[in-house]
Amino acid sequence: MIPNANQDRTSMTRLLDCARSLIRDKKGVGAVEFAFVAPILVVLYIGAVEMTVALSVDTKVSRAGNITLDLITQGTTTSKDELEDMEDVAGSILAPYASDDVDLVYTAVTINGAGDEATVSWSWGSTGTTPPSVGDDITAEIPTSLMIADAFYIRGEITNVHDFITSIPFTGSAMSSLNLNETYFMRPRLGTSITCSDCNT
Image (tube, rainbow, N blue to C red; front, top):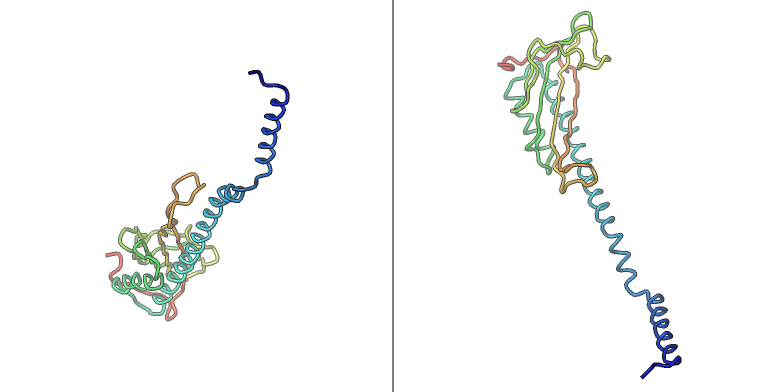
C-alpha cells in the first residue's frame, strides 16, 4: 500500500506539533539552571567560610604576638622558662583554633651610640626555630625609624600555620594551608634593657 499525500501531510503535521510542544515545554529548566549555578554557589560559600576563619585566626595570631611581647617587656629580666611559658599564653589566645604549629622567637636588640648598627644581645626561639646568635649584626632587619642611638628593643616574631578546611581551588596548586606571621618591637617598660642570663646557652 502506497501512502497518499494526505497521510504524508498528517505525519508531517504530527512531527511539527511535537516539535512545537517540545519547544514550549519549560519543565526541567529550573533543574538545568540550578545544575549550572550550584557549583559556583558552593565554591563561593566555602571560600567565604575559609576567608572568615583565616581572618579570625590572623587576628588572634597578631594579638598573641603583641600580648606575649608586652608581658616580657614589663620586667627587667627574663629566662628560658618564662619565654617558654609564652607558648602556652599564645595557645590560650589562639583558642579555639589549633596552636600546635605556633613558633615564637624573641631577640634583644641593642643600637650602638652612633645609631647606625643593631646587634643581638640575646635571643630565644621555640623548638625548630633558628634565632639569631649573640653579636649578630641585624641592622638590615630593623626599621630605620627605630635606629636611635643607644636604644634597646625586644623583637617578637610569631608564626602560625593555618590549615584550610579544604584545598583552595584555582590557585595553580593544592593550597591547603596558610603561613601567618607578625613581627613586633617593644622597648622595656622599666629601665633601659632586659637581660636573659640563660638564653643562648
